[in-house]
Image (cartoon, rainbow, N blue to C red; front, side, top):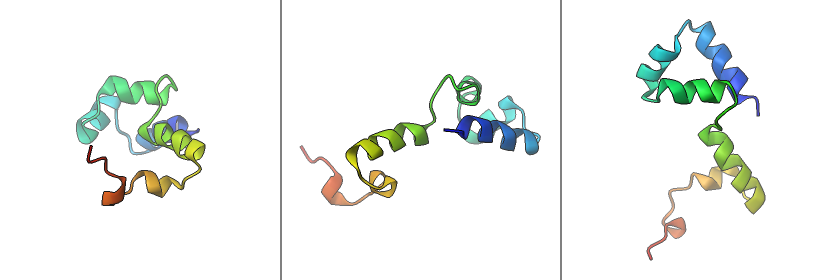
Length: 72
C-alpha cells in the first residue's frame, strides 16, 4: 500500500507538522509518524487484507446492519 507516502505528501502539502496533524486528528504523533515510515499499518490496510481473504467487498466490513452484529 502507498498510504504512508500519500499521508506524508498531503500533510506536507498542507504544511502541517506531525504535531499539528496529531492535534487535529486526535491520533498520536508517534502513530502518524510510524504510519508515514511504514512501521505501522493504517486501519484501512488492516481492514483490506481480511476483507480480501474473506472475499467480501470492503464496504461490507463497514456495514452497520444488525445481521452482522454478534448478539451472543
